Length: 583
Ligand code: AMP
Image (cartoon, rainbow, N blue to C red; front, side):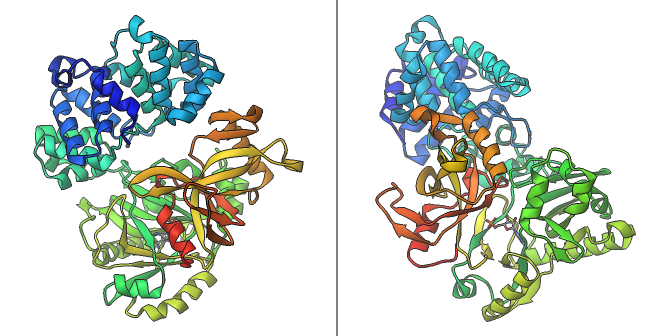
């Protein structure tokens, strides 16, 4: 993590004490110096100490900003705004401000592998450090982010960006660019920011993490920690909460080992995860990426309003006609559209299948065992059913949870789930609390026999024949580990998507290119497009740095509901190579 350039930047700082001087606290430069110092050490305690010392120099408003920025967020997580500034736009802006040609910048991206580092080097070498003194405050950084978010059109956005970068010193440019990319890459995860807050203000980490989760804003968690107001923060309707995730079970023996004597078995539905917030006469639906999607599913609010109390439900949005579950591909027809026509509503109706309950009638349910959460959920849905008007009946459903005491019964359950049109099984520990954002072993998934991996596209090439005008050949990667965001390529796929999907992605890749080769025929792209791929088998290979390559990979579908943080890891690939075919 601690690359030479970063260490050099720290050493050239006038004095480390500058970081702790109150006067400079609210300046972007002080943030940047602290970030450089954090990058220069691999020791977590030291990182926390540096952050803590810095937090103490800040006013309340700047503390909120700095905590968010260190967690890699441009806005609070509960704020749906985005800046939508791609790597390509940043590179153009860096070129315009420094006067360096794209041809000059490109090799720097290859060598440094990070847009922020490129900005620093380019600004430094062209002497901008001499003509521009650091004057950016964190408040101005926030205004810039807000302005970029509110500006429409690539050209206009670029102008805003260029104007801002013209008044940035090299170190400021480095961190403005990193922030706009959305990843500081200084070896700091959100969990460590929470830990630093807890240590700095001497509060329990669990409380800080809980407030961050409930409020959806690490900045607010920091401020509450400073003011000793953590205990007063409770659940808020219409603020989405991260979802609890499942781990793949290797086989039935794995289930038997992990689960208690009796466990819940449910169908694993193949739709999109949804969190329904209901109350104050309003309904909102959020996806796994915490984006609001209520407008896409106009048939869902009415039945959800029939719930007898305020509530937050966790469940699956599923295409279904009556009892018949429709394939996921049907749902995809609706996902691509901005507005849902009446024809489409009739062609692909959706239902909400609830399987968990996070909040009901003023009661926060996270810490209750699943068995209790289900009990309350069941009675809520039953009452809503009674109230539902005839035409809404069946649009809000409950996922059936069967208590099973023998893992050997799962074979038959798996087949039954498949015959109902579902993907496989979910196996859940009835004693488990709801752990937002965590992938644990209290929820296990048994997926289709076909082994699949969720991967992210890292580079693309133009295709051949009919596809010679499309960027249709994708190289894709997995993460090194859950806690290590490094991407490692594992294969290249040529087929599986429709021409319409390829055309749409071609436009996206052109707009989000980091580097171009062979006159744009080969492009390194921003790693954002997540795909589910299947393959013949996994073999060891020297071709990729991961050490593995997928044989005959095929793209099953886009997974726009997943972010790059959620793709599979090298460990999953390794297990597949060792003959475990269930991911
Ligand atoms: P995967 O997308 O393969 O990582 O599997 C986890 C996903 O399974 C969750 O995010 C849910 O969207 C989905 N899922 C389907 N059915 C259930 C269920 N009964 N309980 C929990 N998650 C489910």
